[in-house]
Length: 308
Image 1 (tube, helix red, strand yellow):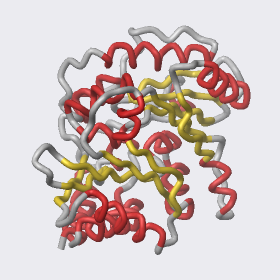
Image 2: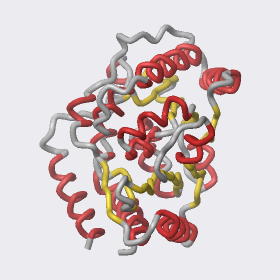
Image 3: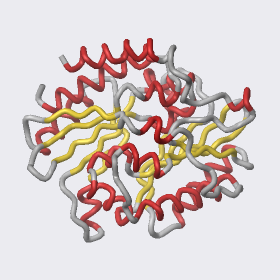
Image 4: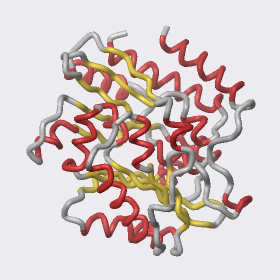
């Protein structure tokens, strides 16, 4: 039943997107300006894509307070499936001293952690983008968490280094409040504890054409720096056959791929399963029908994990 509801929402969205003023990315080739995506800061690099990427990863590796969790090469994944995609990579990294306080306020922010920065090529130009902290703040209703300002500064500094440009606080994310006031999250209560729910989720993914890119135990990360956090686990997975066409339509979609599902336990001991919903289509101006197959699969994974 939940899966059919998701498909209805996607169908409705297909109609609504023809009526709404576009809020997603705009071709940099057409406008001469950076692509515009709600909640993202996107900066053009003064360096080629290889140098931009290697500089970014090098700066991250050199910082003792940051740990690189994973890197995802969307173009290489596309090639493995016999598809073509311009350079498009994402690096996932974090510092639990900064991220844990956000999850202590609202665990759903764990779906957007670790932090990530995207490097992609579009129309012969190189861009670096990240989710602005104001987007996370609005999307997860975080309020004023002290570490948000530190995270914001770090993201801008890293992007400045990668692009060899000056990224300042004036480079505001586009359309944050308009998009993030509706969280874009789909959450289902589980009939089991975190361990059982997590095991069912991983088994469902393993039994599908999708493959797990990496997992993150946010609670363990918090404990590693002496902080407390209720069980909160993230799995990141994908299938380039389904994901690549989204990025072919809108390169910025790479910031939201691979797909993410969060399993978490609230203060009352209830376990939930959370994923991003169909509003990905609005964020990147991807036609809703292209999301239907992915949406159905992800909805099925969530329902299986929750015991539905």
